[in-house]
Amino acid sequence: MRKTLLIALVLAFFCALMAGASFVDPFSPMGFAVIKEVRLPKVVLALANGALLGASGALYQIVLRNPLADGFTTGTASSCALGAVLAISLGLPFCFVPALAVVTGALGFAFVYLISMRGGTVEPVTLILAGIVVNVVASSTISLLKFLFEGSVLSVVFWLMGGIPLIDWGKILAVLGAFLFCFLFAYRKAALLDVLSFDDYTALSLGADVVWARRAFFAVATVMVAFSVSFCGIIAFVGLIAPHIARRLFGASAGDVLLFSSVIGALILVSADALSRSLLLKGAEIPVGVLTSIMGGGFFLYLLLTRGRYGHSGF
Amino acid sequence: MGIRVFRLRVKRGRFVLNVDGLSVNDGDKVAVLGENGSGKSTLLLALGGLVPFEGEILLDGMPINRMSLRERAKRISILVQDVGLSFNYTVFHVVLMGRFPWFFQGRPGEEDLKKTREVIEFWNLTGLSDRFYWSLSGGERRRVDVARVFNQDAPVQLFDEPTSFMDVATEKLFFERVRTSEKTVICALHDVNAAVFYFDRLIFLKNGRVVGDVSASEVDEGLLFSVYGVAACRRKLFCFY
Image 1 (cartoon, chains in turn blue, red):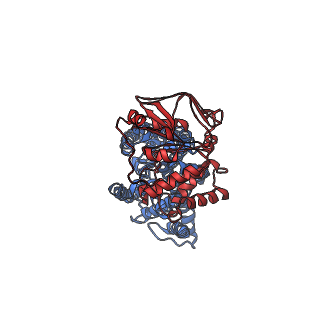
Image 2 (cartoon, rainbow over the protein chains, first blue to last red):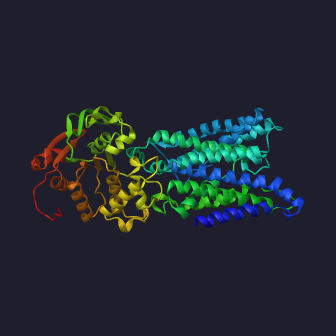
Image 3 (cartoon, rainbow over the protein chains, first blue to last red):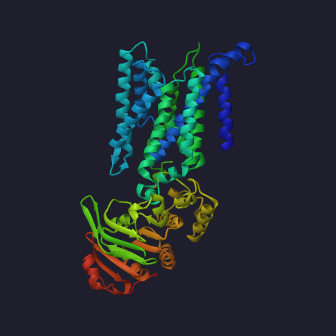
C-alpha cells in the first residue's frame, strides 16, 4: 500500500505537469518552457502545500484528540489569512506576511481552544462551532480589508477559496522548508504524539508533559497552516480528509499518520490543482479550494453522519 | 522504604480528601474500599502525582512532586478508572505505549518490543495482539489496559477498579497475578470479598477520610456497616477465589 501511494503521487505529479487548458508537447522548446516556467513551480507548490495541510491536520486531530479538527475547522486557517491580508494591506515586507499569519492564527486557535475547553478536555462540537465563529469573523474582516485596500490585496476569492499561484522559487522553497522543519520536529516525537492520544491522566502517568507538549505541537501546526495560507489562501478540508484516509490505510500510529497524511495531502492537492487547470477552457482556473471544498464537504458530512459507528474512535 | 503520606489534602471541586500518616511498604498489596464518591480515585490520582495536592507524598523518601515526570513514570504506574484513547490503535501498540518512559530518544528499542511481547503473552492477549483496541469488548479492553500498566514495569502499581467489565476468570487471573507479583500494589475496589481474599491490607474511606486501616483478617460486619451503612453477613454463596 505504501508503494502504491508513492507511485500514485509520482503519477499525479507528472500528470499535473501535463494538465492544463491546452496540450503542450514537453519535447518542443515552447512546451518545455511552459512546463518548466509555469507548471512545475505550481505543481511543486501544490505538493508542498498539500503536505503542509495534511501534516497540520494530523497534528490537530491527534493533539486535540478530535477526528473533526484541522486548520480550517479550528478557525486557524482563516485567522492566518486575516494576518496575511493585514500584512499585505499595511504594505509590510513579504517576510512579515507568514509572521503575522502565525500570530493571528495562534490567537484565533487559542480563542477556539479556550472556548471549547470543558472540564479540562476539549468538547468536539463546541470546537467546531467556535471554529465557525472565528471563520465568519475573520472572513468578514478579510472582505473589509479588501474593500479598504482594493489595490494591494489579491482577490477575496483567492484568500477565502485558496489557489495555487505562480510564485518565485524562493517562496516555494520557503514553503518546502517550513514543511520539512515542522514535519521533522513532529515526526521525531511521534511516540509522544501516540501517548497524547490517551486521556490526560494516563498520558501524564506515562511521563508526558501534556501541557507543554500540546503547546509545542499547536505552535508547530499553526506555523504549518500560516505558511500554507500565506502563499495559497485558505484551502479547506485537505487537512481534515488526509489523516482519516491515512488512518484507514495505515493504522493509528502517529508517525505513520503524520507521514502518510502529508503524502495523501500532497496527492489530493496536486490532483485538485491539475483538475482546476483542466476543467475550464481558455486557460481559466477554478480556485483549487472550490474543488477541495466540494470533495471535503461530502466527506465531512459522511463523518458527521457516521460519527460513533466505529465506537469511540471515529476512524 | 515505600510510600509515606503526610497531611495530604486534595481538593477537587467541592470534595476534599484528607489523609495523614498513611504508609505502604515495598511489596505490600493494599485494597482501597469505600462507597462511591468516598475519595478512592482521588487518593490514587494523588499518589500517582496526577492531581495538585497539599502535604507530602514520599516514595522511597523522595517527594513525588519533585521527581521529573519521566522518573516518576518509571517508579509509579496507574490505571485510571476511565481510560480514554482517541484513535483505534492495535492492542500491541497500546501495550507498547506502556514502555514510553523507557524509550530511548523517544523511540521503542528492541528491549521494549521484547518486553511488550512477553507482557502480551503473560496476559493471554497473543490472539488479540493485532486487533484494534476499540473493536474489543469492555473486559478485553480492561485487560489490555492492565497489560499496559504491567509493561510500564514500575515498582509501584496503582489500579482504579481494574476488574470492571472483566468476567470472573479474567478477574481471578488479575488478582492472582497481582498477589504473586513483587510490586507494591494499591488497588481501589468495590468487591469486598476479593479484597479480603487477595490483599494484605484494606483501607476504608468515607467522605474523604480514612475510617479503617486493617488487615484482611480484621474486617468484620461492624466495620463494613460503618463504611457502607448496610448490614453484611458471612454466608457462602458461589465464590471463585
